[in-house]
Length: 234
Image (tube, rainbow, N blue to C red; front, side, top):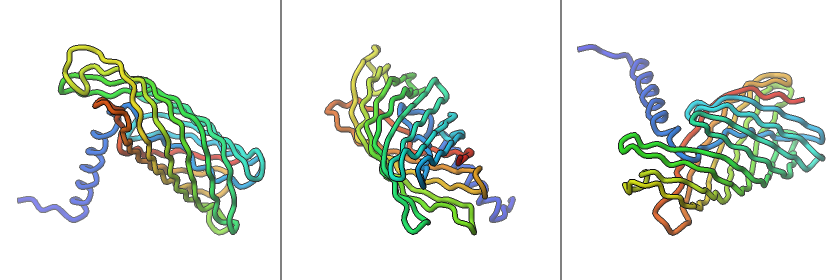
């Protein structure tokens, strides 16, 4: 009987867990978006972030700009597999604390398209959605000793979807058009590494939808998304 070293077992567990997450992700209408947590510091502060998502394959980019010493704006866009797309814009306030931490509060609107598949039936669920949201960010900015930055955000709002159900929720041999309303909860974390203006970023985001419409059909979401990229502060 073959014996596996502890490191081999850990590698197998990690690979199995990652494969399981890949199966769970990428098969829902809505997915968590890896939006930059900018941690603005001053007027005319400009951050450009770009990267890729792994669990829900896509490319993404965001631009954040400090309009004043307390007000900032942000734009985000992503394009993914199966013609997925999402855009959002937001405006908010920010404040530095002790020259090490930044708090931000944004509000905005998002618009996108997503699709889900069930190969066992087969069946599809797809359509467009609108998101009205608020987002709170808290993070540590880089200092002279370390170029690392860390941030956490919690995003919540109302997700309104217009969807086409082709045997996804029930077998009816017809395509049913319906509207769905949900409360979105989307926490995210990020880490940026590197000294100077250009940093390497790692992002992790999760999402959960609470259905508030009375019908059985609803919008579904992927549980997790993970990715990495580059962040440049001008």
